[in-house]
Image (cartoon, rainbow, N blue to C red; front, side, top):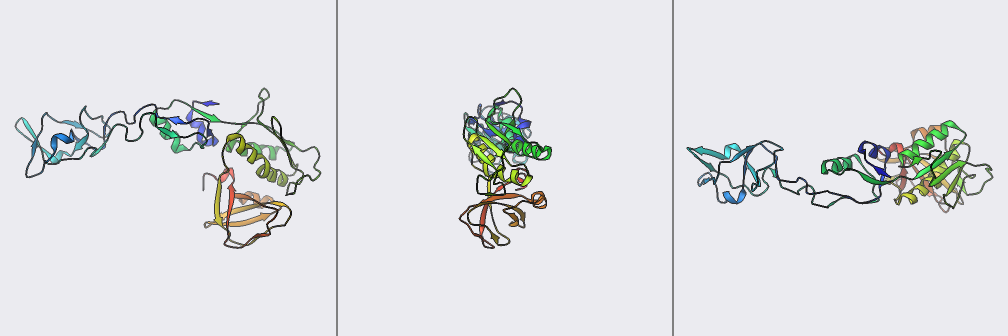
Length: 312
């Protein structure tokens, strides 16, 4: 979809669908970074307090942000110049770019500001707008969401929006479907969330367990990886040492939630999700079925929860 209003980009965590190119040089002409006199550096080669160089023309006084006159590439402090009758003398030989930003210093013409497949940040938006980009193309999958529990449904909708997806409207064809599981007979070795499932198709369909803990596990194990694939991105992971040992049950993929405390992962729960743990969680990891766990101090990679991305 085409996004023309930049204020909506960063909050939605959207991903670029095409490279964003600079429409031209930025700045388009040399600008002053300090108040003083605009000069051409080549005209003042050899200037010093003991051997001042006369100016070929009366210098132009500029302020911060002013465009330098054509041919000028530096700004000289007022104290480095003096007037003697009708002539101006310079006592310094500034290199090109002294107290000035030359044309194209920040961005060259047709330079890639940000490549496709990268999430948009507020800093990127600043670069887009200052460079004069009018609009950007983003990957924004449309997700059909249906769950009977309003609290779970609202939480899922918020997580999907933070991930860069849009909730399908009645007239829209979805790219992914998340729906309540009709039959929660255990189908996958996922703890919690044994009743979850994903069916390949156009679109793929993820069955969500009815309880909040199973829905949380299904989101991280099935739905978010499917969204990552649709958006062409990798999960945003963060590695931290474990504050305490984590034990895992062999034979099942287990969801583990962590709080980040003093730069370490503090385990909150493994294989079962409590409301207290969910409220404190900053990151989630899927412990593989062949793992018995990880020792204290071991480095572990986990996916940041959407609500924690601003803080880490």
